[in-house]
Amino acid sequence: MTQKKEYICKIVSKELITPDTAYIGIDCPEAASSAVPGQFINISCSKFLKRPFGVASVSADRKIIYIGVKVVGKGTEELSGIEPGAEVSVLAPLGNGFDLTVADSYILVSGGTGVFPINFTYETLKASGKKVTVVQGFRNASQVIMNDPSFILTTDEGDAGIKGTCIAGLDSIDLSEFPNAAVLCVGPKPMMKATGEWAQAHGLKCYISMEQRMGCGVGICLCCTVKTKADNEDGYYNKRCCKDGPVFDYAEVIW
Ligand SMILES: Cc1cc2nc3c(=O)[nH]c(=O)nc-3n(C[C@H](O)[C@H](O)[C@H](O)COP(=O)(O)OP(=O)(O)OC[C@H]3O[C@@H](n4cnc5c(N)ncnc54)[C@H](O)[C@@H]3O)c2cc1C
Ligand code: FES
Image (cartoon, rainbow, N blue to C red; front, side, top):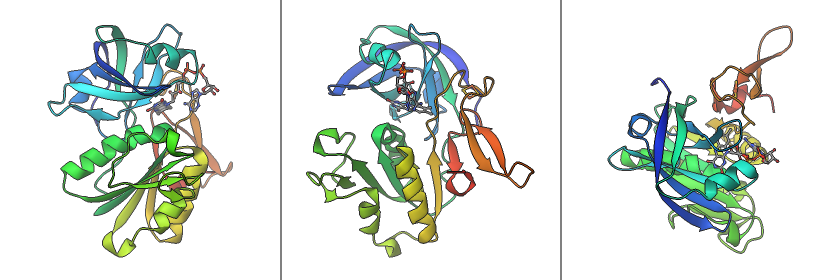
């Protein structure tokens, strides 16, 4: 995996895809050329710490990185209001990313802001010719973003797609069409836990991407730990989400 570096980058595009979610293009050829699905970037705002965002896509010429920013606080509010031409400091690419060689076919599952990293994963798998399908889970139709008509859409309220959680979507898949499949999921914790349980029940490997609160983003401050199973006195080992993750084998995480 390539060495991350810090870059001063220009914002080249910004689109509000919902009233509280912006899709932002950042001119960062150094990071765009090497970023892999599941990795994230850290971006400066006027707050002390940079904020982490999953890579949602890269341009065909591998010069621009796209991220989706949902407003949840001051930093994301500021970033979603940023306009093309502005400059930001970017630390990228960060984290391990998904290993897309572990299986012959892939079932991707996303919800919340997990739709962004899963979008990049889907684009990459599609481009490589691998068999892939995407299940998206939202609360209701008004929350649906980054959707493609080929995806399996589920909503809790049933006003779009299949009524139910992503598990209803997963149950609708004919697994005989997905030989030696792996399940990759990014979403709220309960979604990732339920998806991992579903995968295990069907004998499939499952990898999830954790979105812990982060400080430094580069493995120093230890504020992003994830408890993982370990054969030691404590019965667990603290891994750093930013450096050892954010992608983990579902089976190694203590939920
Ligand atoms: C690896 C990784 C990838 C991410 N990818 C995306 C993405 O693609 N798009 C996106 O919109 N967001 C993403 N996030 C979450 C995003 O980083 C946070 O929403 C952001 O840092 C909040 O900053 P703030 O200053 O607006 O909010 P703050 O004022 O710091 O916090 C406001 C609220 O948001 C909550 N919050 C803050 N950080 C997180 C977090 N990491 N997870 C869950 N809740 C949090 C706080 O608990 C608080 O309730 C990702 C986080 C990580 C760790
Ligand atoms: S955010 Fe500092 S160690 Fe992970």
